[in-house]
Image 1 (cartoon, one colour):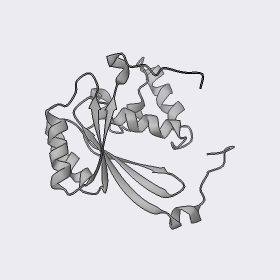
Image 2 (spheres, rainbow, N blue to C red; image 1 turned 60 degrees about the vertical axis):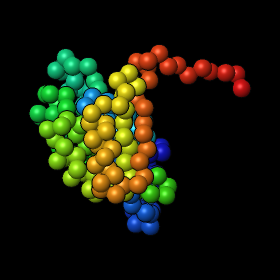
Image 3 (spheres, rainbow, N blue to C red; image 1 turned 135 degrees about the vertical axis):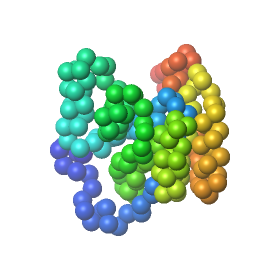
Image 4 (tube, rainbow, N blue to C red; image 1 turned 45 degrees about the vertical axis):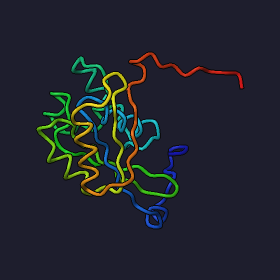
Length: 170
């Protein structure tokens, strides 16, 4: 949004290409957090959603997490996990994206596959401190089996391994 006005009008949405991207990876590697942060940082959330979730966290004496923007089911919020796929929308000048947040727990592999089956591309999230885990491999294999050829690996939680961006005066 720019000056309170949407950047894109309805005509822009019609003339753009659509793309479905599934976000997958092992449990607690930060899939929902990455998506929540993307939506918040690009002003792609419904108006008031960020403030609403922050207020709920404050009332329940819980620290705010960007993942809470996506974990809609009460069980998901209570347990801090993704159970079912969640879809959210994001757009750029060229495309409309449907971002599918897939669960990382082995018990919900069927839900991950259901979400991934609709995707043209995938983002495989890996926790920098834990590295590649069992479900990281399993999810990568499933993406391959589903014929998803556009896969990007995102190394997340770099702060946990002492990474810091060195700023220069260039």
